[in-house]
Image 1 (cartoon, helix red, strand yellow):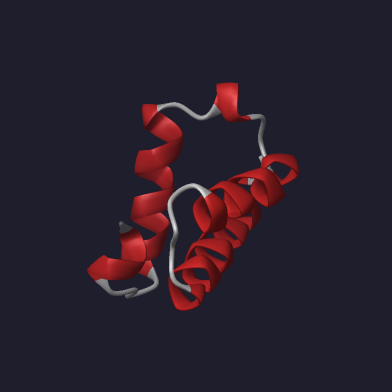
Image 2 (cartoon, helix red, strand yellow; image 1 turned 60 degrees about the vertical axis):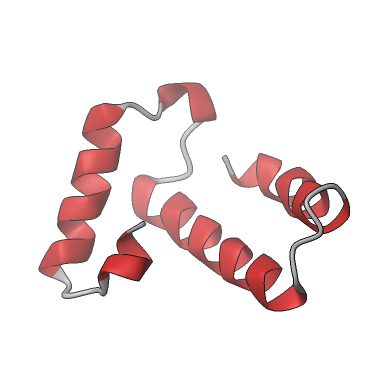
Length: 68
């Protein structure tokens, strides 16, 4: 998944015209997701992976905006 991050960030900047703060927020959150999921291939991420990720965030007391 981390191998795709630079392409997504460039897409967000160029095609979606995200503000710099939004780009940085996406970059940070996606890097954290890669870390927390063990940097899987995108095709390997399933519903169970997302639920486990959210459960981990809830148990750490992270805000709902962080979980989104």
